[in-house]
Length: 465
Image 1 (tube, rainbow, N blue to C red):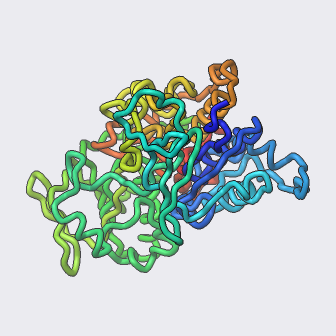
Image 2: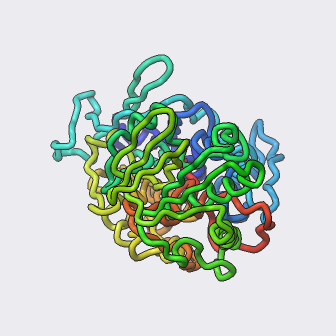
Image 3: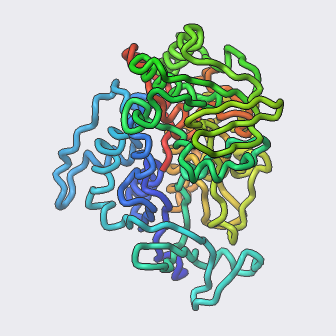
C-alpha cells in the first residue's frame, strides 16, 4: 500500500458541504482533515445569517450527518434534536442548530482546523521532492501538498485526496460590464459605497441605508431579497429611495418567477412580494443598466454605457459569484470554458439552458478532473453558474466519498430527484445573477414577512461552505 493511502482526505471548507463530506467519509472509516478559513463552522453563512432558505429543514440536513448526530458514541449522548422538518431556517439557524453541533461532534471536532486558509494546492513525492503541474510520470502516486495560512504563520500539510468545498462567497462578480470591474469600482468598495451581496437593511445595515438612495444591481433572487427588505425599510422611513438596476430588459417572468406555480413556495412568494413593490412605485426599475464607471465623493456617482448618470448612497452588488481558482494553479483541472465548472458538469448546469430543477443528478465521475484525487464540490463545483442546490452538493460528496473508499458501485449509483421549476431559469451570470446560486437564491433568500411560507419544497436550498 502506498504511504499516501495513510494520509487524510483534505476537505477545504467547514460549511454544509464540507462537513457533509467529512461525515460521509468518516462513515466509511476514511481519515479526514477539514480546513476552514473562518473561526467557526459555516463562517460564510454567518455573513448572511438574517436570510431564510427556500427549503425546509427536511432538505437541509445531509443523511450521513444526521446519522452521525443521532447515533450514540463514546463521549456523545446523541441528544441532538433535528429541527422541525417544515420550518424554513435562516442562515443563522442553519449554523447554530445544525453545523455547530455537527462540527462539535467528537467524530469531527478533532479533525477540523479553524483559521486555516488554503493558499496553494500542489503535489509532492513521498521523499519530499516537489512536482508541479507539468510533471506526469507517477503523478497519481504522489501526495497532495496543501499550503495554509494560519494565525501562527504559513504551514504545509499532506493529503491523499482533496475536496475543495470552499464555495464562492468571497469572490462576488464585479458590478461593471463584461465581467470586469467598472472604472473606479475598487475605490468605491474601499470607501464603503458597495455593500455586501446580501446586506441586512432591517438589522445591522439599517443606519447605513435608512433614508438613503440605494441602487440594487441584479435580477436574481438575492436582488429580490434585498429589494423586499428595503421596501419594508421604506415603510419605516419614507425618505428611503430604492432603485433596481437591470442589465437587460424588465421581463416579468424572469423578474417575478412562477408565483404559486413554484414548487418551492417561499421562492414563489418572494417574486409576488417583489411585484407588489414595483407596481406600487416603491421600487423604480432602471433597464439596460450597464455600469461603466463609479466616482466616489460625498456620494457615489454611477455612470452607464448609454450616458445615464445616477447619484446614490449605496450600491448592492447582487450580481452573483465566481470561483477563486488561484490556489489551484498547480492542479490539472478540466473546466468548462463558459461557467468554469468541471467540463462534464458545465453543459448540465449552464443557466442559459438549465434551472435548479433541471440539472441532472451527478456524482464523482462527472466531478473528476485529470488531477487524480482532486474534486471541486458544492457551490464551487458550479463555477459561475447560479443553479446550485444544497441537496445536489450532499449527493456530490456522498458519491465522491464512496469512490475514495473504493466503492465504485455506490459512487456510480447517483440518484437525486429535483422538481422542475421555471423560476430558476436564468441568464448567464455575467449578465445577471439570475438564479439559484449559493447564498443568492435556492440557498439563501429572505421570505416575505407578510407570508408564512407554508408548503413543501422538492429540493434543498443552496448554501456555501
